[in-house]
Structure formats: structure tokens, C-alpha cells
Image 1 (cartoon, rainbow, N blue to C red):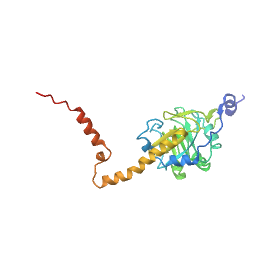
Image 2: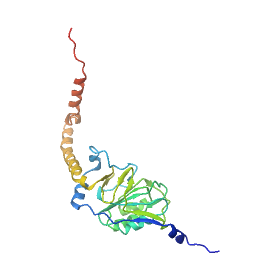
Image 3: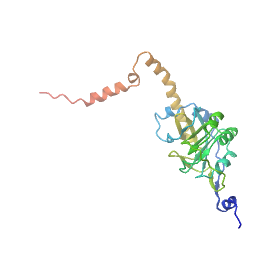
Image 4: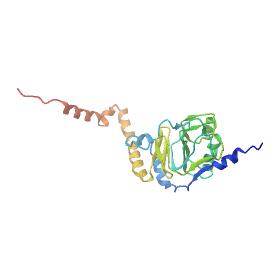
Length: 243
């Protein structure tokens, strides 16, 4: 009886999409963006924030970089390995797992290789494993959680540098990514300057305001909340009818 190799069977049905890497965002813009806090941007922007269930797996520094996207489903992790040979210093690897929450696609070896390639981080809509090793390597990883069941090299399918979705947010190759312990934000490159400068200005204004609070001033007096509520209440008062 002739037994066919599983790799031979996979070869007959393999399907891959491999596109070119996107241009990297100007390093000065990336540095500007990294000075902004996602939680500050969240005070004035509603869109582009990834589902908070995708979280940092340990205490990570704030990172910003150019999105390099991959997508693959189920147990075949071939595309993750391919991406490790393509990513450049400064890239953020964005991983769409097509809803899979069973198979871990990032472990200690992947994290180590990504760090060695100069990647800023891996942000994945899926599961990771080897959390102790990932912490030891101090390589930032965001994921939905942990699983001991891992992907395998099966050479079946995968997509590289295609539009993907993670945590409900569409991500195109070349988008800007900003992430810290509070969450992940995706922006178009042309949005960086306006958004980052506004956030940085807000961050600088917070210090003097908190100093006033420390002196005994009340925050709603300083930020205008009390004054505005007084205006609203005054407008709500019914007119006094004459007799």
C-alpha cells in the first residue's frame, strides 16, 4: 500500500497570496506618534481603536511602527514563518487569524526571531503561547489570550501584505500602528501629524492642571465642567410669570 506524504498532499491544494512590502512611514513621523498616548487620543478620536480584548501579554513599552499584515486560519502557521523572513526593523507585524482562538500562532521562538529581525511588535487577533519566554525576550506581543495548542508548518495557505481586520478594525499594509498597555490604535499615515500633535499638547497641559488640583482646586472648576452645568441649569429654569 502506497502512503502519500502529508506534505505532498498539502502541496496539491496550497494557496498563498504574497505581495510586496509597503513603504515604511517616515521615522520622524513614527517618533512623533510614539510620543502620543493611545488613551489621550481616545479623548478626541473614536475610530481606529482595536477591540480591547486584544491586550499586551506583559508590561510593554509604547511602540509605533509601520503595519505589515498577514492572514491565515486554523492550524497552519506557515505564513507566520514566511513573514519572519520579510519584516524589517521598525515594522509591526499585524496578524489576522480569521477568528481562530484555539491555535497559538506566536510563541517563544517566533517572538525571538521577530525581535532579531528588528520588528517593533506582533499584534495578533488570536492566541499566543510560551508567555514566560516572551516575557524573558522582552518582545512586545498583543493577543487575545494564551493557548497550549500551537499552529504547525503545513504549507497550505496564507496571505502576506493584504488588507486584514483585527479587533474589528481594518488594517492595510503601510498603516501606522500605535500601541501600549492601554490598547492599540491604527491610523493612516496622513493622520499621524494632526492626531499626534493634538495628543501631545493635551499631555503637556495635564501637568499644570494636576498641579492646581494638588493645591486644592477642583478639577470640574478647572476644566469648565461646573461653569457649563451652571449655564445649562440656568437655561432650564422656567420663566417667572407675572401676576
